[in-house]
Image (tube, rainbow, N blue to C red; front, side, top):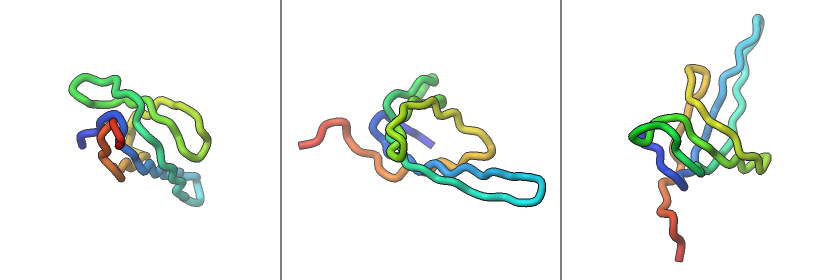
Length: 74
């Protein structure tokens, strides 16, 4: 999956406990791509908290690109 700066992402995390499983999701915008050739990790801005955080894909995360928008808006 090619992820670029300004993309909007839906990140869903599966949380598994001994007797149950649940999912939580949030939407974020990619501020920077730190891996080589547009690969992980990503600096993102979470819309739900307003915080910047490092997003490193792992098996418990599902990442879907919602919008690949150009950086400039007119």
